[in-house]
Image: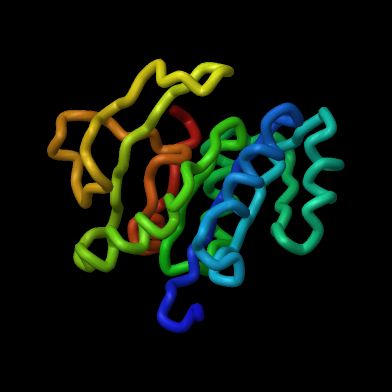
Length: 172
């Protein structure tokens, strides 16, 4: 049953990530959140490797946006401009989502409906899956009062309104 579940736009910017893109996309499809309530947009930012061919294998499960290389901010903005979801979230193409991530994002917005963004832990792991770094130990939180910075690429989920103010700065 998907009644009442918000549409989530998942934006995956990619550039020459043939070695990682499958794991990133498969981590989205492994979510318990219903796939029919996800709009998965992959922005191919001018890849010259096999990324484009790999993306074709996902067929209509993903919406591909191809553009000349504009950098990570330009790729994110291209995805934002086509996002239809009540919630917009990012996944860099060399990252993966933990199980249940999208459910926790929706739950955080339901618990704090006034929030425009939620932030959550970021974990850096090695090839064997051992944690090398974790940026904060708190739960999904509607603010950054923990003194930690959130990674904008794949660790921030937002309702569309904050993005109406211009998106990601491309010159930084």
